[in-house]
Amino acid sequence: MASQMNPAPPRKRSRRNPVLVIVIVLVLVLGVAVVGAELYARHSVVNCMTEQFEADLGSQVDIGLSAKPVLLQAIDKQVPHVTIDSEGDTFGQAIGMQVHARANDIDISGTDTSAATIGNSTADVSWSANGILETIQAQPFGELVTSVKADETDGTLSFSVGPGGLAQLVVRPTLGNGDVDVQTVSAEVLGFGIPTDLVDGVVQIISAGLQIYPLGMTPNAVHVDDTGISMSLAGGTYELPPTNGDQSCGI
Image (cartoon, rainbow, N blue to C red; front, side, top):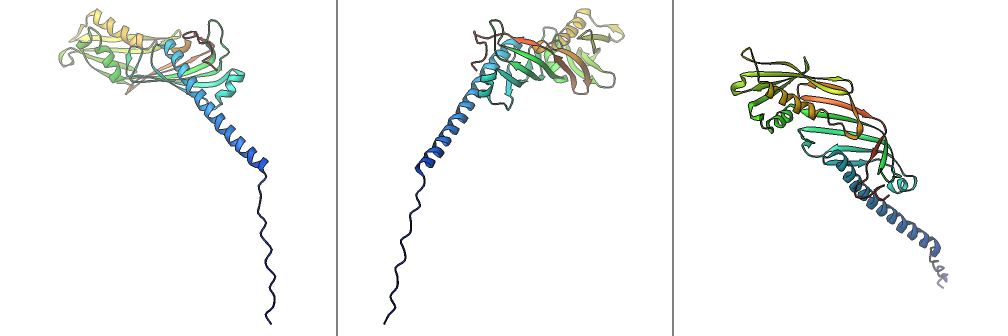
């Protein structure tokens, strides 16, 4: 007689708590919404700050924000820092100049006359020898200058003037009284002086290029190496003017 087998008990279907499922879905949806809102806000703020800084500096720049969420900045109106990098190959009228700046402790509360208040700022500026030459040659007298050489040993720039570099103009940028002063070291052609107008024109162009101080900063060091000129700048409190009526970049 075959033994009688007891049928296996039916499996119990696992039923998820519908409330838990709803909560998880809501959390995911909320997370996606917050991330989307943050990305949109960062994009909008970068565009707005780019417009404001470009209006103040007179040059195209790239803006980088700190890691602090923009949505939080909208609440406390405090931005830890932004980075400001010159875009392209010019800054102002200086060809071949690169500027890398950082503005710290920014209050974006805004007033009738200010879009934001910067607590302090720093910048590194580099101007290549080739860029200096191109800037000089873009002037009416520039075709007379054929080359430029930066010499780190004595901290000078030497300009060859005329056919075959017949004449030499040597200048030295120095720091004094919160400004960069470009001094003429020598200006001779076969022992005779180079025309004063040409010397003054070169000195003025270099001086103008080295006196572009963004965000109210002042130079604290200037250095000539074999590639060109470099400067470091620093600044304190500075109010950024509003652009198109915007006081706080919409955040």
